[in-house]
Amino acid sequence: MPTPSGRRLKSKATQHRALSAPAEIAISSIQLQKLLLLPPTRIKLEEYFEHSAIALPYMALKPMRDGRLINSLSRGVEILRLLGGCDGPLGVTEVAERLKVDPSTAYRLLATLEHGALVAQDVDSKKYGIGYGVLEIANGLLRRLSVVTAADHYLRSIAALTSESTHVAVLDGPRAVFVARQSGPGILRVETTVGSSEPAYCTAVGKALLSDHSEDDLRHLYAEPLPRYTPHTVTTIADLVTELSRVRRNGYAYDDEELHPGVRCLAAPVREHRGRIVAAFGLSMPATRLAREHIPALVTQIVGAAEAISAQLGHVAKPAVKTS
Image (cartoon, rainbow, N blue to C red; front, side):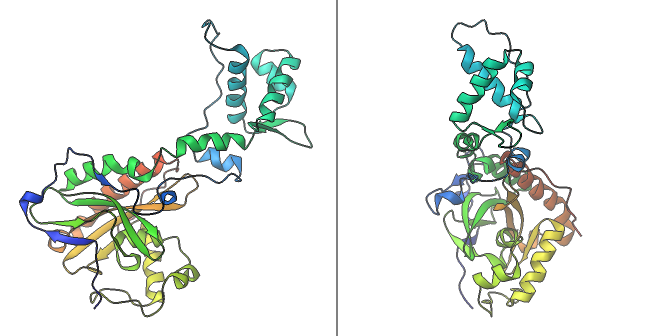
């Protein structure tokens, strides 16, 4: 059988890592764009703002009594908030009425913002809406919202709550790459190594990452027969498709000693603002400690963490998962 890498059982108490320390992360082990979620410059604006935390509801700015503020610039900010919070574009007169300024002033402000691509005028209606330039500026915020940063709290808290090891992985071709992890406090525990990778088709984090892939996608990634690591490893694309269908239906993935004998794992997908799976949050433990009756409670913790991380990345939470 092939020899897997990246995960192992440890039993030395001296190797225990304090849970109060930040979870170990790695950014340079894979391409940077796999960790930083950058939206494309051409997507439907309503979809982007619906799934992001950037759009703010319109509210009039307070009267400006601070001499440090530039009145025209403040009005421009107010226009951006106004248009960003509206269901559709607004005309010059509508903007003037909302801001309580002359139409000529509103027009000049809109023309200035349009010059910077922050607003865009509809060719037919001549009304104004948010421009694509806003997305370019928003990239600066999204660059800071990396998966590993968002996951750090949950890596530590779930490890402390369950006394098991937690980790985050991203997909790199056919393999799942571990980019962050937190060791459990137990003497006998499962360890993952940041920067290492494992075949995605037979791991919980990997199956969570693959769960939105079509059969054609899978055939491009893997050649049959799939390498068998244990008696539980799937070896055909058809069986993998069936397993991923179960992952989508239940909302989590389960690794029943499919890669490492004596190790069982649970994982759930992490999604970004457009709903794409960008990472997986997982929990690993010795098989003797993961009985079937314990799965529902652990799934609640894992899925809850994955959804919380997804929410930080702008994704709208989905309904509660099934555990049967």
